[in-house]
Every structure is written in C-alpha cells, then in structure tokens.
Length: 203
Length: 125
Image 1: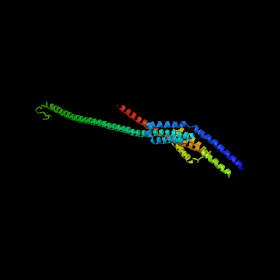
Image 2 (image 1 turned 135 degrees about the vertical axis):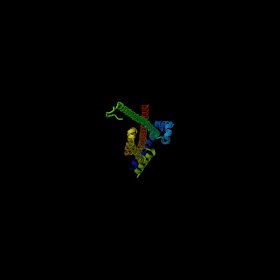
Image 3 (image 1 turned 90 degrees about the horizontal axis):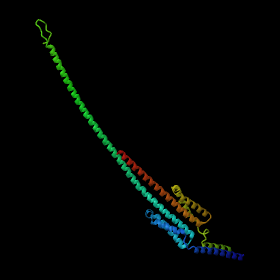
Image 4 (image 1 turned 180 degrees about the vertical axis):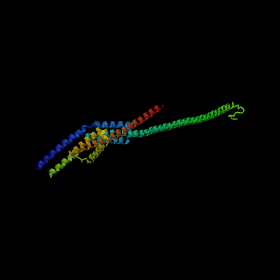
C-alpha cells in the first residue's frame, strides 16, 4: 500500500516536471514579443501624433497609453504570450476608442458652432423679412399719399368746375333776362296809341 | 494520509507551474462589468451605427461565459476584457456617428436657408 502511494507520488512528480519543463521551455523559446504588442505601440504612436486625437480626446488617449504600457510591463515581467496578446488587443481597441472619442468631440464642437451659425442665418433672414415688410409699408404709404393728392386735386378741380358752371349759369340767366327784357321792350315799342282809341299798350 | 499529501503536492505543483485553467479565482467582477458594458452599448445607437464592434463584443462575452462554465477562468477574464473594450468602442463610435449626422443635418439646413435667401433676393431684383 505504502509502496504504491510512493510510486504514484513519483509518477505525479515526473509528469508535473515534464509539463513544467515544457512550459518553461516554451516560455524561453518565445523571447520575441507577440506582433500584437508592436501593433498596439504603433497604433498608439499614430494616434498620439494626430493632433485631432491628442487635443480632442486626451483622456481616452491617456487610457490607451496605459493599456499599451500594461501590455509592455506584462511582457517584461511574465513573458506570457497569450496574456500579452490579449492586453495588446485591448490596448489597440483603446486607441480606436480614443479616435472615436476625438471624432465625437469634434462633431460636438461642429454641432455647437453650426447651431450658432444657423441662428445667425435665421436672424438675417428675419431681419431681411422685416426690412422687406417695412419697405412694403412705406411703398403702400407713398401710394396712398399719391392717391390722396390725386383725389384732392380732383376735388378742387370739380369745385372749380362747379363754380364755373354756376357762373356760367348765372351769366346765361342774366343774358336771358336781358334778352327777355329787350324783347319785351321791343314789343312795347310799336304801341302808337291813336287818339280816341283805347290803348292797350303799357306805358 | 499519504495520498492526501500527494494531492496537495500535486496541487502545489500545478500552482507553481502556473497551469492556467485550474488556477485563480473566477473573474466574476470582470464578467459583470463586461455584461454591463455590452448591455449599455446595446441600448445605445450601436446596433445601428457600430454593429460590427457590438457583434464582436457580444461574441466575446458569450465565449467568456462559456469559458466560465468550463472553469477556464484566465480565458474567461481575457475574453471579458476584450468584450468590455469592444462594447465601449461600439458605444463611443455610435455616439460619434450620431453627433456627426446631427452636424451634417445642421449644415444642410443652413445651406437651404442660405439658398432660399439668395432666391428671394434674386426674385426681388
């Protein structure tokens, strides 16, 4: 019983050692950092060099830098390829995140500026509209004035004409009267009353 | 007694050699963080504007959950970390796209206002 246990223990140790050695061997064999680490580093450097990203998303860029550094530190300390591959992939996504955050920030700034611009254009349009309305009012006023003047002069003219008419009528009446008187006088003229005859003429 | 000791030794060996899978605690916190990030991204405009990133986040989260079930905790943690950053990326990308479109709409409406004003001005002349 005791011997069997000892054998079992030996076997376990042997297997463990073999596995351990092979793992250590693998670790030693891969002293070359995974390609993802270099890619993450390059991606970060490019984003950092982009003024749009560095000015618009400094916080996200800082997080990306930390993620790259974590991957580098993990590689330096542990040389764990799979862990570093994962950390590097996360770091690359963090760089992408910083780029997206920069786009977002820029778009926010654009929206704000365009909003102000739109207000300005609307105000201009309204001002023009008001000016146009003012001009229309002034035009209408001018036309009304002109019409009033025309009406006034027409009234004056008609009054004048009416007066002229009255004058003419009076003149005519006077003329008629004169004519009538003349006629009457003409009729009364040949009244030569003879003596002894009753005279019908008016004297 | 001896066999118990052997088992302990074996476990220690496992730990010392850092054999993943049987080592470490389950990364429950990381998984729930990733879950939250994926859910949040799903509620945003990400399904519309960043479907690829969101799809990747969901896939990675599902794989993380599967790894958890198989007690592959290291793998689960890694996948959850990837899922989380992808979900965040999806959300930010979608938000950026939405804001960019708003800016574009504003730009067009200003253009329309300007051309209307120009037309009115030319009609009056």
